[in-house]
Length: 124
Image 1 (cartoon, one colour):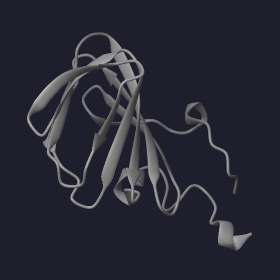
Image 2: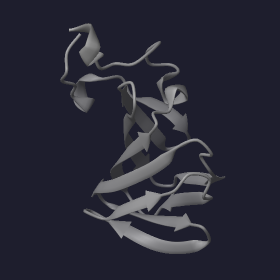
Image 3: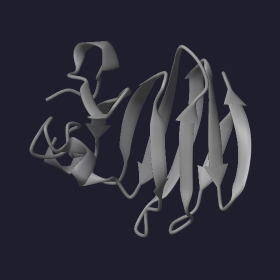
C-alpha cells in the first residue's frame, strides 16, 4: 500500500445523473474528486456525522448551504458544519471540485474499495 494516490488512476463512478465521484480515504478523513456534467442536481441533504469542505477546481456551480445560495467558481472554498442542509446544481458545461470529509465517509467507498485506501502509519 502507498501513501500516494492519483485521482486520474482511480475508478470514477456515476452516483447521480451527471454527478461522478472518485474516492480516496484514510482512517480519519476521506477525499472525493467530484465532476458534474450539466445538467446535474445534488438534492438537499446533510451529513450528521461529518464536517465537509469543498474546493472548486474548475468551472462554476450553484450551491446552497443553510438556505443561502451562491455561485462557486474555480478557487472557491466552502465549509459545511455537521448537520447543515446543503444542495447544488450545475450551471453549464462541466465543473470539478474536491470534497474533504472529517471523519471520513466510508459509504463513499462503496463500489470502489472495501476499506481505507491509505495505509495506517502505525502498521509501518
